[in-house]
Amino acid sequence: MGRLLDGMGLDLILVGDSLGMVVLGQPDTTGVTIDQMVHHTAAVGRGVEKTLLVADLSADAAPDANTAVANAKRLVEAGAKAVKVEGGIEMLPVIRAILDEKIPVLGHLGMLPQRVKEEGGYRIKGKTEDQASQLLKDAEVLALAGVFGIVLELVTPPVAEMLSRAIPVPTIGIGSGEGCDGQILVTYDLLGMFPWFTPKFVKPKVNVASQIEAAVKEFIDEARKPNP
Image 1 (cartoon, rainbow, N blue to C red):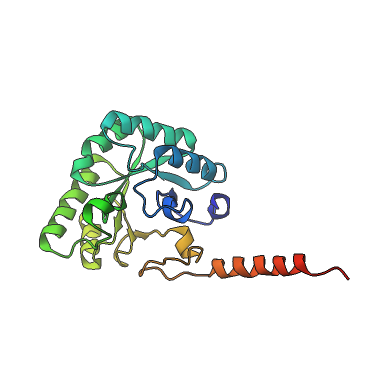
Image 2: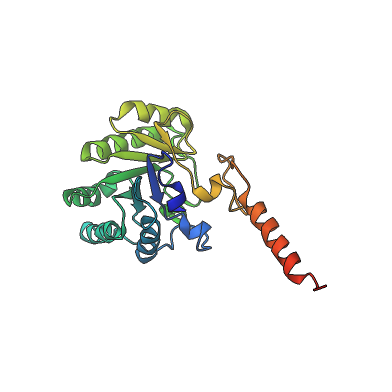
């Protein structure tokens, strides 16, 4: 997949911990380990030469700054050119420590999949003034710390657009409207490869799942056809 996507004009390719659901069959991203992230990053990295490759620090990867730095280095050794860290002001020590090692960091605000159990589900952020204010504070702090961009996941579109205009680094939206500076999607969702669940904000461009089913059925029919 990395080899297919490389060189198509994408600004970046993210090896996200959403692989826990669409590849590993887990219910959410919270069980994804740093070992799994390193494994998948290395696989994608073997196919990507032209596009910026970013990898998620998994939920278990940053209990403290020193551990986060060590795990960020593992992802870089596997082929990533930058790492993504979920969270705002509370993650500042981790982000600064990684940046001090000259490893670029992509921020992630709004709905934080790694905290879905703590928050009781996937909830849209920015609906209240307090939430919008906190998102702005977080975004400003991350930008000041030196992240090269911030993913905004499931942020209400007006707030996402406000954040995009307020901070000096690009925002990358996923389910946050068209007011962000860029957009990102899970490749499996974009291609219709995970028919069991499609987020409301996704409109698959093709239906690869049905094409796979048709190809396999055709193979089965041919293989079982009795010899003349």
